[in-house]
Amino acid sequence: MAWHANIVTLFPEMFPGPLASSLAGKGLSKKIWDISTVAIRDFATDKHRTVDDTSYGPNAGMILKPDIVHSALTFATESAPCPLPILFMTPRGATFTQAMAQKLSSGNGVIILCGHYEGIDERVIEYWTQNHGLTEVSIGDYILSGGEIAAFSVLDACIRMLPNIVHNSASIEEESFYLDLLEYPQYTKPYRWQNKVVPEVLLSGNHKKIAEWQKVQAEDVTRVRRPDLWQAYLNKKTMD
Ligand code: ADE
Image (tube, rainbow, N blue to C red):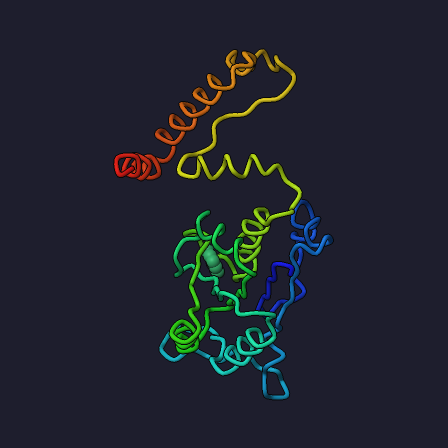
């Protein structure tokens, strides 16, 4: 069965969007994964197809109504081929990580709720968290105009690791080996460019020496650029 993405959104026409190109696009045509959308507006009950209303409190802004989001999520879960984890894209969520991508990728797929405008009524998020294990996920500390672009990131990170997606699986394995570190520098031909040459060790043909050099490079770049990751790496090493 294909890995299934179901996107609950006000803008279904945005999908599959960029995921129809590159690696994900190939996987989509090969039916390794598939995608469906649930248009939140289809669940509006009035003739103007209203989905939002003014927020309680002094702040201006429109909030998606809980009953409508609830109907859309209910439809999404009931139409899924099997029970799937549910994510809600929001800057208030836990930061999305490679480990989360790996976990989702090894499952049957995902339902992603995308918010828009000022937000979604808190009660429907609370209800789905308590009753259906909804998880709030952020892709970083910045505000997008909606969850859709965040959902593309989450989906791409999952899809590229699906079995049978045409990639160099050795490179995925290597990534998981180096998960806690930033990537070491890489080079291709020509040997000399702008008077810069490729590090000598890479021409040696000595795989063990090359692996050692790459590890030192990965450690150096991590220590300098990401002290937070470096500290976590050191802590993990002392626990092993
Ligand atoms: N929606 C708006 N901003 C977002 C972010 N940073 N991550 C996930 N969803 C979002």
